[in-house]
Length: 103
Image: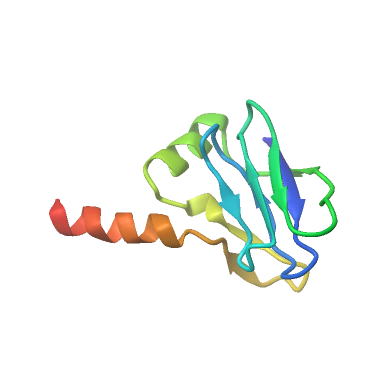
């Protein structure tokens, strides 16, 4: 499935939003994207990043569930150097740990 994405020129992260309320930032915080498949909203410092499409090996439902259940399986993407990069999910990882303790 194709999704809208943006690339941060500073940290080289490529990020995309999986659902309407999935606000995603790059690791350095220079760019962010929101809106999933409903709309594309960008936040950025400096030069506006170009929106492009990438192919993600998942259905729309899988992307939504990944966001909704805070699994972040699709929060891992490759950068230019072919290294795996974890996108900035600090606020979600806190809630995920809290949820696991209370279950």
